[in-house]
Length: 486
Ligand SMILES: [Zn+2]
Image (tube, rainbow, N blue to C red):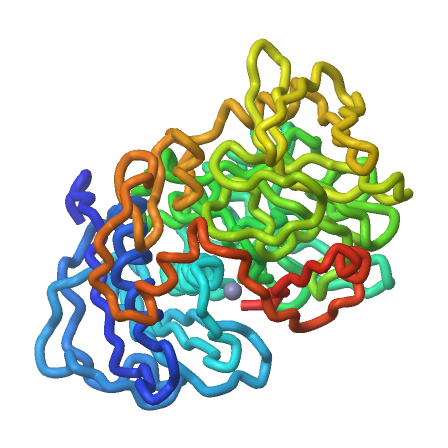
């Protein structure tokens, strides 16, 4: 292969496996064609063969007969993604992504299939659209090589790629997992976790083992095994792909993560110490995410090894332009809004709420819904808003460090924020800060979701366990839980 012959990845989508009698399948096509492909092209370059061979047989035979349109001649493309709907998946997963074939010259995956569980695919709001954008992005990363099987094909083989490590959970069970130790990934992790001597990053040991990041270490990173609102494409996943040797990746287009950042080596050992921001002594504690974007609660998940961990509520991202769920008093949502702990009516438990924010000279200015502004100058300071509401100040140094990394106007609450300060806008907006509404040319069921932004509060359906939410019910809030593995 010629050196330095990298080119933006060319992707061909095949929707022949979509059962169009299912509802809203045009949403899948819109997300894949208008969000996923442009985002992958922004991130990835490839080299080597510029065509995929004519198929002798169905390359994805493990996953039902697909309608194969390319069996007669080679196709000029780098990656074919077959998209298939299934009425129901026994596992309860939202989707799967499987590698079907490799490029013979480079071993890079060049054909894959995404299967979507239509039982879980319920999209009627822009929040649902965002969630499924993340879900489909995750499945595409599996197709592009983020799987246990493909790790074995990394350059240098097993010796240079991972160690087998034993993970012992709180309930006494243990399993062997890969601990990745490829060079760019280790370099990133040493800096990110502040763990200079880091020897590897263990993958998930529970459901979805060895094909995902360990949830307790990576939180809501895109390649952790549970679908939660707001999953982030971090430089962990991008460095994984760099180390595969199959891609040149633009790490400036990663999203900023916060889980475990700067917390030292211990968090990588999966010990769930409550000295870390992400772990709690009891369930049901309301809090804010480490970047102050999302409202969270503490709970146990099927991937948290019995540890009580931080979980993002649905409809809880303060800067979002789409309507978010209220939980405290006088909340203010939209660009510039951040999560603060509050106390309502002198209750013992604190509650998270969204309020306008700004940082100047190490002072946080908090703005409540009626426009009133009040300053935080020190950690733990109590702002008295009314006889019902107090706001508890975060550490201004920590808060303002996160605040200073925001994108222009928080991408107007309509997009994803890259580490280089650029935005990736949703289906309905464009411009540097996603502030310009596009004329929607998609089908009415998709364009209707454009009016979510700034619209009235949507009543969200609660599914799955709702016990943790009971305290919020007092304030007439219900949340959509979207915590399937995928
Ligand atoms: Zn997955």
